[in-house]
Image (cartoon, rainbow, N blue to C red; front, side, top):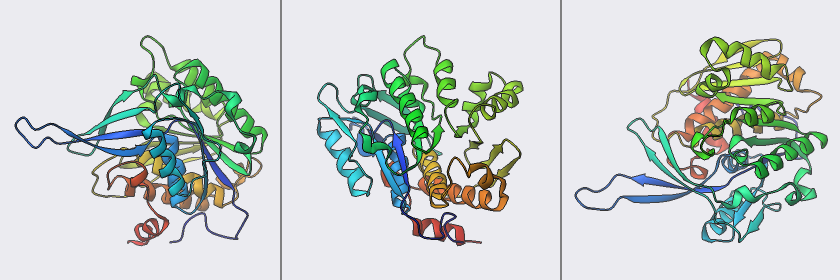
Length: 336
């Protein structure tokens, strides 16, 4: 099966990803005795992962955010550029260091995080830091909730979503909630809902839907609230279980792929990258999104492509390094 986004050659339409880029330090098992635990450095950060994922799949991607003027900021900028991500609108600062995330894995490859953020450079991006070029040729503008955790960066995130829509882009949000990043005593729900109301496309995992709903009984009301705002499509993932999709007129499920999971760190980001790359390649726009979503065959093909991307990412360590290439996705899709 070919990439769901293939078809007539068009001028590249860019998937723009806004937010954090950081360094994941993956814990390796200690050798035993008094041997110190070792950590492997991987480039990451959810929106940056999506940008790299889109580029690896052959799409046009741009990353926008703030990096520290430190060795980790240099490393991230170099790795984004080497992945063919447009970094012309990335800002740098000496006022804070690049964020770090220490990652540990359980026996099933499920990850847990310990964040060294705040303070961090990515949180210092403000609306005035957007370069006018940030919105050029933007097909989709993608964010997650990690850039909502403090008032200044939250305002910049919302401003970017609104300016992207005014520029003719679809707005995508993967909730990607990390409770440890929010200040103690702060209820994230009001800020989450404010951003979700700006999104045309929403991706949640099952636990995030439960949080928005408050209880299992409230899930349908939460989904109706999303689809009653700007959202025209909501995707709900549940690991290896089939994902759910909902539009304003229909709903259904899509199968995932059985793989040997070793690290789930960036699987959701790879899924989002496959989804957005396919939508951009199809030429989906605010004017045509409803028509595209009504075509069940095309919708199913894009979701299958996205699921293959997510599955492949779970079979390898890291974040940028876990993003699959298009040929790998094609091979998985071709398997019986």
